[in-house]
Image (cartoon, rainbow, N blue to C red; front, side, top):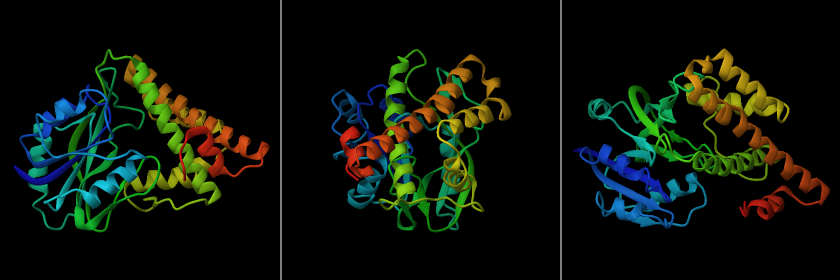
Amino acid sequence: RLSISAIILTYNEEKNIEQCLRSIYDWVDEIFIVDSFSTDKTLEIARKYTDKIYQHKWENYAKQYIWALENLPIRNEWVLRLDADERWTEDGLKELSRIIFIDSYDGINVRIKIFFMGKWMRFGGTYPNYFLRIFRKSKSKVENRWMDEHIIVNGNVYNSSIDVLEQNYDRMENISLWVNKHNNYATREAIDYLILKYNIGKIDTVGNLTGHKTERKRWLKENFYYKLPLFIRAFLYYFYRYFFKLGFLDGTEGFIWHFLQGLWYRFLVDVKIYQIEKKAKSENKDIKTVISELYGYNL
């Protein structure tokens, strides 16, 4: 087994968690589950693979990971961040076992292969996207933000050729599960945008125009995309992904994916931004108060 501690956040993940745990069980030294009081069979399934199960009240992904890194009895320097809908392959774990023994690396990026309705989303700029999933605990911290948090590593990050599979639910699962999850994502992304726009709180960012791909994408999002007009930018982004980045080559499933994730989701974020700002202006309230009234989040 590799001297790595895996951390997985869960809430009602009975459809995903077993495949996720099975994919790493024989390879990592210890597995931690940080659960947000699931009401399904998530914990019953998880107990077959680990007894290191903790429950902590949910606020957002970033705060949950920050709590985990500060409070869990992690015994290894290397930490693997894993989402419940992600699966590692044997080839990926073999490559990881070679990389972590190179002392000059403090973090490792992997390539996430997104599957939607059973099909790999290969085009539209979706692959290869690099995400930092393995890091030295003493050299890293989690961005404190409401959505799309990344790991910040104070050291050298290696871009590996490891493919991690993101397979959220079965291909024939009710699409409402995906829609509901992204509706919640849109709320948190709107909050991040408004915090940044009105300077109403601290928000971390890895944005760096001269950095690696993830850092460049964040910089372009905050300094270019966010400067474009509401609503129009969602259509421009979709056009860029579906036509310029060849998303149409992903077929019918790709059309659904790029439309929902590249247009509908981004449009929904803007709708929530517009509604919050309009309510704040018409009722003479500050942004934080309106967010609390509409969505129950206290900034």
